[in-house]
Length: 186
Image (tube, rainbow, N blue to C red; front, top):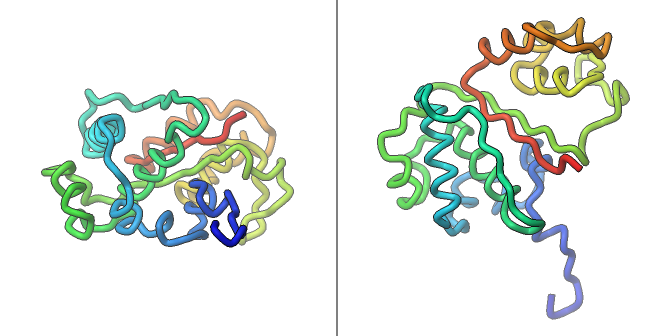
């Protein structure tokens, strides 16, 4: 910054980039991310609530709506959840995170989906590696949860751009638990 080489993008958290494994280690590496993150009361509460649900507590809310002004930490909070669902052993995290998670049962695989509005491709323009063209949000959600196999559950609704109905429930049941993060939805 002192030399005039400041690029704001270097300091901005970007959920889509992290989900693709791109970017600086302070955002992409779960341990480094938490080493540099100050756990505010709000972030502690969010993590606690999410981990309860992911650990199988059916009384915990399945949806958490983050409401803050621009620059209020929504994306950073979602990155915290993304990293906690990464499958890394809890013992690899900084002590403060280990203490917060305590006896949480995050041992089983947790699906991860990042739907970031300003990074989504218009319908079918960028095929997936096997050539599948995704047309809808539920098609993208399915693909991120389980690739081609998961996509097939909602494929007909995706191809016709119609309501997936019970297929979406089937998808979410089959691939639970999962963290589904939605960012930049304007």
